[in-house]
Length: 113
Length: 114
Image: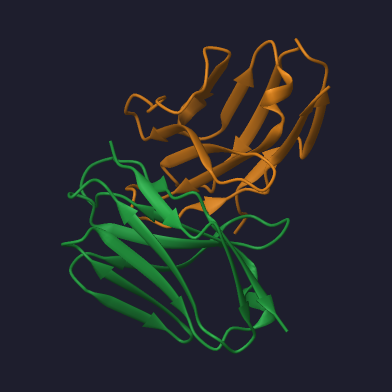
């Protein structure tokens, strides 16, 4: 089955700097890659996703890149703000079939003022 | 409309007792997931229901854990003979058909086994 590895487990950056979180996946048939954000004491929420027919997707200060050959994808947050502090989870799944979403272990991002 | 709801929000139980956790998914969502999240840890997959298909139970940690989904809607996660290591937040999520649909998470049930 699919296995998703996420790095780093913790990340601390200065406010205004960029943050990058990386994930690798094992199932070459996976073609859907969402990212979820979980603020302290709250439930996870989808922030961005990408399908394998594109290599990059942007939404304001966040972007996700995908390298299908290397089987890895990354989340990029630019001009970080205190409200970006949270745990971020990557995930992978196949679009076809009733396959479940497999999550990475999570990255705790702290933005230092 | 209403989001995913879970009950109870908190549950304290004695070791060895059975507990039932309830999840009410968003109406019309055919997929339902249960996850376990220990303090500061990731999302541990437990079980996945998709429509009328047989559930994917591959994440259940032991035979003390079971779950059912009645009428394709409400789901109950049952833990028998609870152990202290079962203490965690149990999250339920639902989505429209297919793994690529956004999962909407419930607020979770915080289970404490004393």
